[in-house]
Length: 92
Image (cartoon, rainbow, N blue to C red; front, top):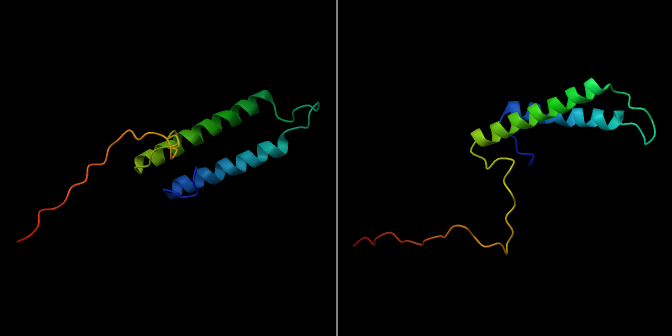
């Protein structure tokens, strides 16, 4: 997602998502070590991420954006629309 925020709510959600991600990275144990978080806490974190992402998507779509599911368009990819040029009538 771009760093362009559509509202204060979107900025808050993005910041909360980034902080939660940092906490998860810091709490993730090294291979072979026990997980410090309970399975219920892990599920709750996943649910939080899903809610944040869902609301961010709604905010972007409400603001007229293409949404987070928009796929990239490559330069060599055929266009699905056609531009029709037109000109205004000349004034006499």
